[in-house]
Length: 108
Image: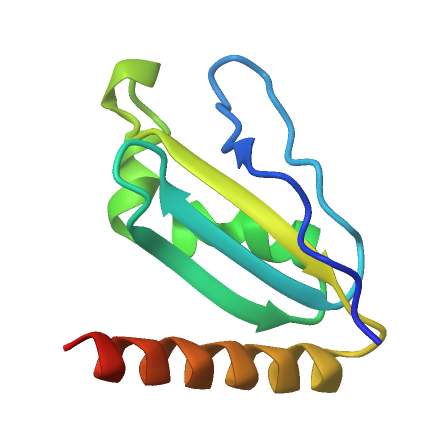
């Protein structure tokens, strides 16, 4: 059984010494642009906190932003959903992706 999604939180700024607040364990995360709500990243992972902390280096384009002043950073928000196992997280992600694709095909 998976827990529900947490509240949206502003993605932390390294320059301001902020930290990620996320479960240390398997689950899902979703990151979006705060202004538009457009999806930036979504994944099912073994450790949500570590995955979010590594997101800037995995995204390539963000890694150089974190060495500049805060105004160069995009305004991002994130939320998390803890699960008992990574397999549960993957199953939940597949269901969510399937529902999103069904919705989008019906909306077109």
